[in-house]
Amino acid sequence: MNPTWTLKVALSEIANQARPPNFAYVSALWGDAVNNLALGMALGHSIAASGTTLPRYLLHTHDVPREYLTILQRWWTLKLVPCPFCRLLALLPVARVRFVGS
Image: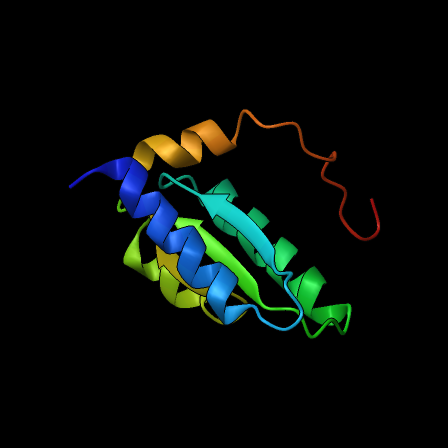
């Protein structure tokens, strides 16, 4: 399976489900670090608490524990993607993470 094609299909599915409007919150998660679970929960909860009606998608890799995904699906629509692409997404410039009360 071509990983580039798989990622394009996943992003295309997200774009098609996000209409209208043509926007969505998208984050990526890989690995089994419990800190990643906490960050995914905090971000998903904060976005949901904002009252937005935009969809929330969490791109994840096969190495994220099933238990984490079970918890995270409360706030996110989950999409499985190949490992190399989440690592590439992490290299993109993003806004600094800040949590409520910090």
